[in-house]
Image (tube, rainbow, N blue to C red; front, side, top):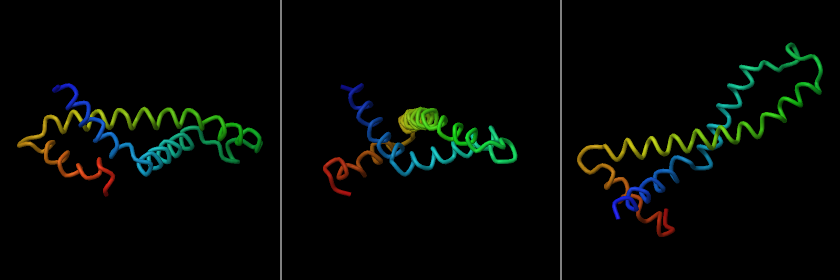
Amino acid sequence: MIATLNHDRCRLIGRHVMSEGARDKVAKALYDAVVEGLAFGPRDLARAEDREWIRGSIAVPLLEATDAALEVLAWSMSRALERAPDGLLERYVGSHHLEDLGFE
């Protein structure tokens, strides 16, 4: 029963941490890191075909890295909140119970 309760809490926290808005922000940050790291502007790669190929080829790795980053973040936040003092996790979960019923 305790494992199920912890799993449910983890899912709740995951839903908040892994929102579409968060996914977009993390993907943008990772894209910026790749662009800066690979430097594939016109000065770096003269052929437009080369630049386009790189842009196209990073789509799948970006999605995979974004998903992995958000999953690790949600898990880490869940673990941190489990160690929070004075029932903070229970208060957090309780404050979002209406969202589970479809209300926001």
